[in-house]
Length: 211
Image (tube, rainbow, N blue to C red):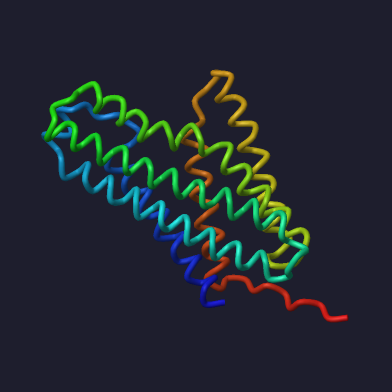
């Protein structure tokens, strides 16, 4: 239980860090001049992306621990959740790495083309990959909760509905009709907060049934 609570707290902290870095930098791709003139702001954005990525990874570990309370029945869905969550956290870490290298190229090596490439990768790596990863994340969680009472069933239905909505938004975004990448990211961060609150103790898993 303590590890699960730690995972819940890590998720809330990770989302807070990601939200703050979005407020500081948004989804704009800075050029070399912007990185030189406002270096500290972008250094903070880099740090917050790393904190956010680590928070998501620890959150995923706590969530997977809750989903695995009933053993082999949840091995498949819990493995999907663990893989998707760790991958999403690592993407935030890589995004921070891209940003850090872009700052170095701008301030030390004066390479504007390299800065532009890395800045684009830092933002788009998250926006492009989040829809597919978040759908797998939510579907795995919903399936695991329906298989065993680790969370309330209404939470499972909410999670699966959220995955379906993200699927629709992702298809519309992919077709180019509208840009929903940020909305998908926002909804996924909100889901992490809700799930983190559950892990912190808002709900308790049912005791395992005995024969």
